Length: 277
Image 1: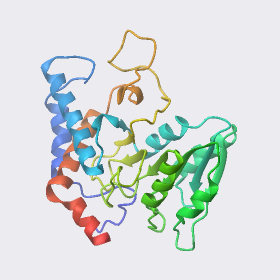
Image 2: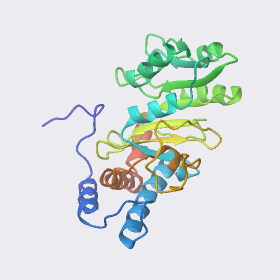
Image 3: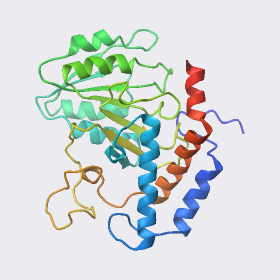
Image 4: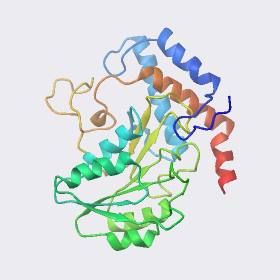
């Protein structure tokens, strides 16, 4: 079979991914953060290792600011709904996936103001057009990194510098770029990075994550289900627990960890970047 559907999900996966998922289901078992027996601690160590490997790939200083989600859509909704309130203003582009413009449209009906930076005929947005849309009440800039429709790559770093200088958080949808294009959250001034595990990162479906820069705080969409501060009626204030309610997808994260380790060890991500450049 000739497979040409990698924009939807990547295939084939590195053999280590399937082995890691199988080992997670048949080897050490436990619910990290809920119990302290040896097997559970081994699982917790594996989850932390995945955060650390993702942090290395994306240039993230603190791996605990990476929160696992079910997919990019989940992460984008977490970032968008966790930031915006009625009366706030948000900027996005005309190239956004419906995982961004649908939640923004829903919030627009509740009083959030929305401005759209139009792309040129090639699908690229001029960074200055984003600057011109800034207002006193702008609370978020949401931008897709690479389009799933025509492959257009947005000037994220340039827009990020504008956002950082204006004190407005920038959310990047890396659904099509994570693992395929170079991403350095510090160099690109990315405050919020939503990414899938199952596309360019070569991990299993049902995995993804949201990076939240220190100093940027989100309102959690779900409460409860954490092993930390279980005697408190309030959601933990620290990350990743603040945004990770309920049991994590441990087999999926194990597979994702194996996939990211493969990318780092083989230099696949770097070679892809070199080809792009």
